[in-house]
Length: 454
Image (cartoon, rainbow, N blue to C red; front, top):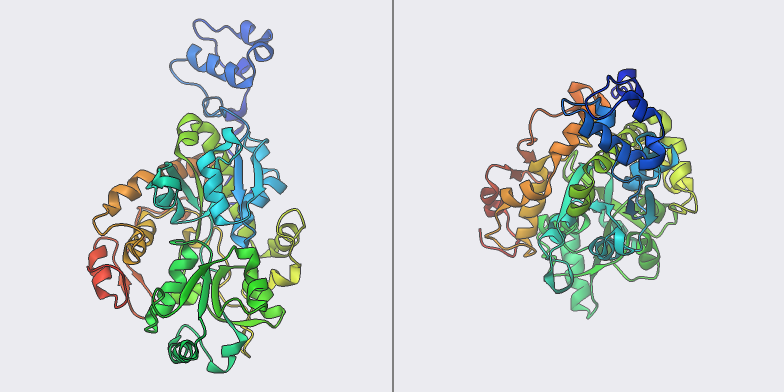
């Protein structure tokens, strides 16, 4: 564990037998086979009942179950879940039977979350930050039936990218995509369809791509055809000419460049520096039923985030997640951008940038409510949520930063790594637009291309 997260003192790990006796539970009865008769979880419950004045926190926090099923997509920002499993952090925190299972797409992740772990689905997932809101509100589920979700943590900041086909390589497209407006218009005039791909409607990649296009005067609903492609299939689809541009996380942009198929116009950190990206989301009913298990899972993931964030661990991280059973991707397609070395594929090469993925630094793990407010506001912009949506009420229902704070306290996280409040304040984008979480309507009014009148 990092210096910032010290384990609790030995006093919290003493056995029940060393705790002073209380009425109804004697030291002898605890020693004489209670564990065998009741099982670990039941024993802790008996201890809690016998000590109404309180018990050591390790006892009070006994996981209700040692198992949960978590989904992930083959993207570098799923690394904390992979590392929590590979490095034994789940086992360390009392939940050794947590499974981390690959999902075919974000649509499959959604469907398996709706099913739930008890019905051969999943209990939680590495997930696009807006998805728990869309699922909770029934906006992307079958028959619009809501499945209540919660966000427990953010998994990372930055390090997605927008990549473009080599067909447009001479246009020198960057965050400024204005050169594509004329090129796309000409292609359409020639009777050809312009396709741009993202990974899930209303998800982060959809929103980055839309923001980028709209900033250049390209309407993502009218001037191009927006299609959905699972992250691991992006490179293959561009290789056969299925799309003109896409937005996805790593390692797929780096792999595209390494294969000489396209180039990166910009990373998403260049659109919004230190932006939130993926989250650890779980079904609300699992969290309600298993609060201690939930906190244990979160603590394991937070510890894994700290491990992933250390530059000296990047090579090993790339080697682990690149394995066949995880991402099945060569280390060479992972390591560069993981360290901040970016070959954009169009002659631009940047070494040692701060655009690498942040897993813990800069409060990367903490789920700021202000960030979720932006995601919902952008989904209002594009018609995924109604303009009348009560943004704060929805955020307060889904965002469980209180659980994050409790987990951080139990981990012994340094006070400097725990934000003072739930808002990071005003956010400024590359084009000068400002999002004030206290006034989302002003932000909406400032935007030119949108599906809603603000």
